[in-house]
Image 1 (cartoon, rainbow, N blue to C red):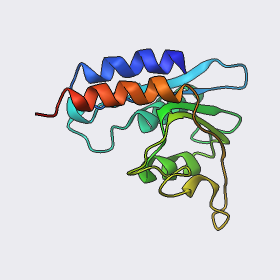
Image 2 (cartoon, rainbow, N blue to C red):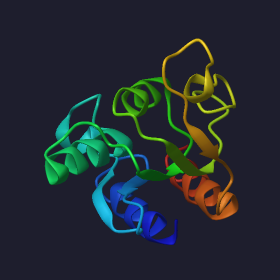
Image 3 (cartoon, rainbow, N blue to C red):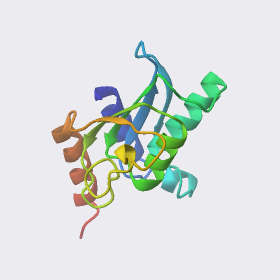
Image 4 (cartoon, rainbow, N blue to C red):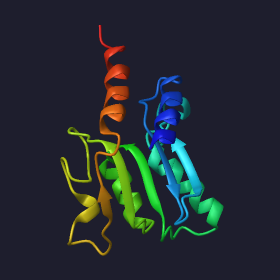
Length: 144
């Protein structure tokens, strides 16, 4: 999570919300990483999680991302949760809760919805204070 936090700080330099993610294999090696780049790319889907999933799929040559763990500084949104499910990622570890748009237990719980064909093991609140503080500082600097 500390590596993701360091990467998240880089996202804010481009005006993007400071969120970062990495997808790791069973040994902990990084298969793909990303940070929010919506502003940088002018792409509404350029969330950290999606960029990490895409890079990992290229690395493996397969969109089935089984036996991996996604580490992300902020609870995934509905769009990212859908991609996580589609890629068959079995575990998500995240830092700060997203009380406005989270889809891993706060607003929605898409990742563990029993009606779906795949469920994800979720570990929440890892380095939550540091992840939350980074977001609070980012948004405080943008308020008049």
